[in-house]
Amino acid sequence: MLGVFLPAVALTLGAFSYQPLEYSLSLDLPEMSQADMQATDPEALHEVSIPDYVYTIQPGDTLSTIFERLGVSQKQMYEVLESDVSILALDTLKPGDRLGFWLSQDRLEQLELRFSAAHQVVFTRAGEEAFEYRDVRIEGDWKEEVVAGEIHGSFYTSAKRAGLTDAEVQRVSALLQDKINFRRDLRAGDQFQVVRARQYVDGEATGNMRLEGLRVLNRSRELTAFMFDGHYYDLNGESLARAFMRYPTKRRFRLSSHFNPYRKHPVTGRVRPHNGTDFATPIGTPVMATGDGVVTRVTRHPYAGLYIVIDHGEKYRTRFLHLSKALVRKGQTVSRGQKIALTGNSGRSTGAHLHYELHINGRPVNAMKAPIPVADAVGDEDRVAFNALKDRLLSQMATPQG
Ligand SMILES: [Zn+2]
Image 1 (tube, rainbow, N blue to C red):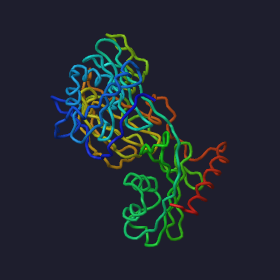
Image 2: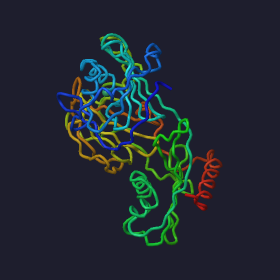
Image 3: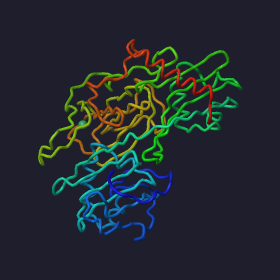
Image 4: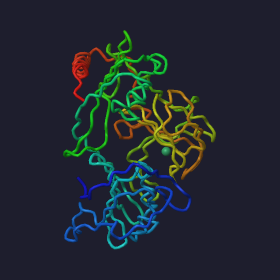
């Protein structure tokens, strides 16, 4: 574990958006007092693992003002941003997240973004004008709980009343969208059960949750979904997700730059991972969602340009950079093959192209080669394990304890 931090303030507001003159976390800029910047024990200053300052993000903060307050130059902030283009972690900061700064005078040696006990991103100085990043993820323990309820009114209000979050309601609807029309088919008195798991690291809840299984009893029908090896299957082991597409465009374009986690910067010679695949697309080429999912981000970044992030369930995520136009909004559900954007040349880009990323369990992988969901059903070799999981989840649903 890197760094020692102060207790977080739980806040849910705030968004991180780029403005031309200043990298901004939100709209208004509150006055920050020196007390907001808490120095750690001076005895520990020479210990690499303890930051000199920690700061908890407040609504309205900008990265610029936080750096200014600590006397760290905007030039160094942009050097961090340049490293961040490979991971785009700064854009996901929200109130309550914590920043840890390691400084020598006004020189930034290391910056840690602490999103939760389970996830940190650390930028470490790598030479005079550059930073390298590490993405630290801790699996922790997942504790299961059952959420059960009955339909009275819409599925949304019934599920919320039972204790599901907006994201979970959306996930359930997306999983069963081909099987049931939630508006038309549900009747008062229909029942639903969800087994979800919450993540804990060292006893601290990280805020991460995942749906392990669910069942909707709709009159005489039983609709089910069980997560097995990162995919959802029904009672019979048939896949609920449609297969992914390998390419995000209708036409095939030349690959102008391959996925390469060890790519060296042409000038500095330092490792600057290329976490995506570049296609030589003319500006305005339609971009398609490669799988069913939910748009979780439509953002501008000084280097990545206009970009879109789509979450495809718990395991898969895709990102599309340097766009000219977004055709979807944050929170929108999209289906495989749906037009989501037009390509462009925004951000720092050497020419018009589409940069496409596929992440599995939070890690970028080669989208051209990685195993993508193509299976339609649980394989014969996995049947015994799948059936055991299914039986365990069903028996939990049968005896909901809240
Ligand atoms: Zn690229």
